[in-house]
Image (cartoon, rainbow, N blue to C red):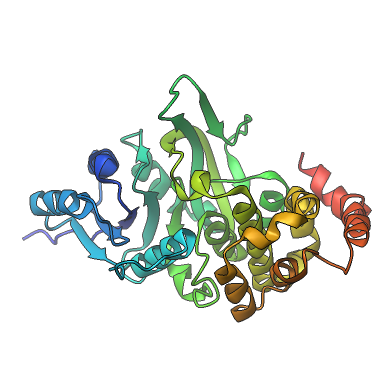
Length: 335
């Protein structure tokens, strides 16, 4: 009797009120052509529409492949969307028992039936043992005006390995594209990232332990919706969240502080110029900053300043960051 193959990849799909997109997301995974079994674990963030019913329909068809969990919501309680999404991702991460895993947002989908096979094949080559993940280009799709298309990265980058410093200097890859080695999950400080286990910090956390192998083929679609967490957030909230992301990244690896400051330069610039609006941000963000020791974000939300006690001094410090010769030698080396 032949031994049944064990699943090699866990696909973690996060949903919240995305009933109309469930079929696209799950079908794009089920269409994968692989020589190994994979699992789908769907995480619902307490949807109030028919999302869970749709997931259950798929689960009923493929009970050995698809399972789901639901995070309930208290009626009438207001939640921070990004925090809920983080907790949803972390709850799914705890379910991973396969050698590899990948996230997929519920309103997005994959476009290549060979995606998972190609990524696993690359990571299993001995010469790529220094890579913690394999990612690729992503296509952007505006549902309201589909004639507008874009891609991430929005420039031509050949197949290659990318280390952490190079990644910080220029690049961004969506977690919809990144197949990670599960062996590093135990090394991720998930308690620190309880409120912000989202794209940038997921990738950054895993890259503390190795490189990303990059493929230049667009094998997934990022559906850009006006009501999504990223597109739907008020601009000032987005700025504050990005400042918090900077603080988290520094706490994860203080040695990257100079390069991180250069990476977040535009965020800091906008924060300084729009400091009068910081009071509009939900006070809960300040509580999170205090709880997790996010000093830059806490200072900004308390005083409207980033690094000092005046806007003028903040601008001077920011100018110094921009013209830091040591950092710029590293930064521009990878341009």
